[in-house]
Amino acid sequence: MKLIALALKNLTRHRLRSLLTILGVAAGMFLYTSVETMQEALAKATQSSADDTTLVVYRENRFCPMTSRLPEHYLSTIQRIPGVRQVIPIQISVNNCGASLDVITFRGVPPDALRQYNANLQVIDGSYEAFTMRSDAALVGSHFARRRGLNPGDQFEAVGVNVYVAGIITSDAPQDDNVAYVHLPFLQQASRVGLGIVTQFNVKVASSDMLDRVATKIDATFKSDQQPTHTRPEKAFFAETAKQMIELIGFTRWLGLGAVLAVLGLVANAVLLIVRARVKETAILQTLGYSRKNIATIVVFEGALLGVIGGLLGVFGAFFFFIIKSFTIGNEGLTLALAPTTSVCMSGMMVALLLGLIASIYPAWKATSQPLIQSLSAD
Image 1 (cartoon, rainbow, N blue to C red):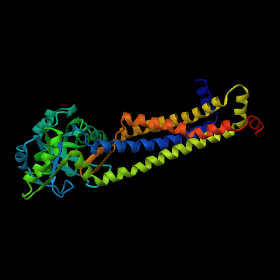
Image 2: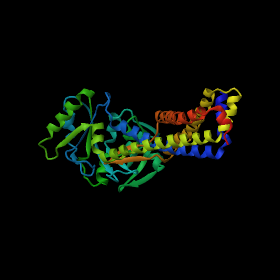
Image 3: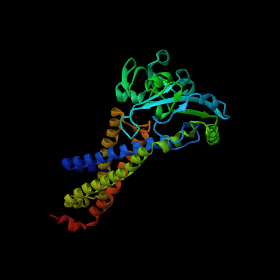
Image 4: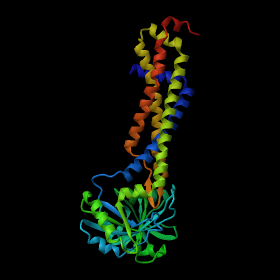
């Protein structure tokens, strides 16, 4: 503890240099945390697990929701296929099919079927009853509502659709927090696709090992129809459809690597300058009884403190920034909420500490490698 206190005192003696280094580390860790937030959101949306039991039935050779049109009467046929547990028709209306940071997505569903299909959907403000009573009512995802500043009782218009906010919802399905659910007939008329036409069917099967079998059966059933289908597991559908967004987020890995290297170089340079500026002082500490190991430990603690303090500012700065801004990136009607988790923050702090320690190794060796007589005679 005494060595840590001494390291902290050494940093405070050069306030401006330490402050600039900490701010540089904070900027690098802010970027690193932002990249990790995007990577984690993408992983949740695309990586399959044993609990996945949802299929998406889409129009064959179509991607943007505006081009996928399926007859609503497919519903009864899909329900009769062995292994199918639940089916819900969905009409999607979106303001932008390309990759964008401000995607507004309406999902039209039968109001009486929504809660049956998604039992984990919770209304955290407003009421589900208000949603079922008005044909123009909407249940808005919590992330969507925070981004747009919406509350129950508000009205808002987008994509040519004017709706009344009946409630704010949350769910364990990431997509539910970023969309507005409205009545299916209302959206069919408002988006001018016509009654009886939907964008897709979401299908829940009895178990995850039946996904491929049921998907093949659905596509084979409608293969000869005028509107053939292409059925995929929900996460595979996301990975295949939102390619632009996935490529964009994949590129950010290089930004994260650049941020890590920048922090490493910044801390190493700062600690090395500190060591070189107090060569004689280090020699005096050795004459007072501090061993070379103690001197090296003090230098390592200085680097670790610079990394940890800068990491705290950068990581939690990014955490609150994303909470306040509620960014959502979307593509082809699919959305990702950019909200950092506790695991991202913890990994960011561990990386900041590790970078501080690694960056201090060479300066620590430099501080103890010079002979004591030579250090005492240094200018």
